[in-house]
Length: 183
Image (cartoon, rainbow, N blue to C red; front, top):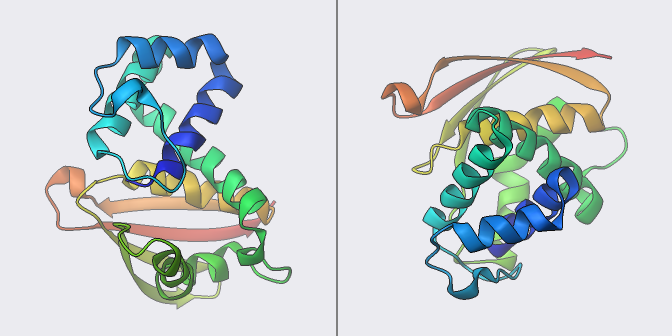
């Protein structure tokens, strides 16, 4: 996994629980990465991220899904701050999400050819709806839903997410049925 996710996780933990909490997580979580030092362009084991999230969830005494979803919302805001060129005026949550697989991920691959990204397939059933089929061996659909809601916040839109098919239920993908309304 790319280091930027780890640096965002560090910021997320510090913002929500303080620097001491991040230091405690690093000290108390067995990691494959030496010294728990993560840099944005680096590559790190997925297991390190999962271990830190589990430890953070336990430390905060919050359900892991809630922590991962909130982290997804945080990451959306960070992407908006750090990669604002993708969040052009006039876009909507739907139009930005529809561009993830064919535009945003293509650009990410140019910067980081070795990155392992999820894949998306789309259905566009109505002007206020979008179906995203999420494929990933990491099974981070909860993170994806947090990102989607976070993007909705950026565009001042509510996003209702229905997930009738999920990797965690043994399916080969997650089907995210999205409905958009203005706040």
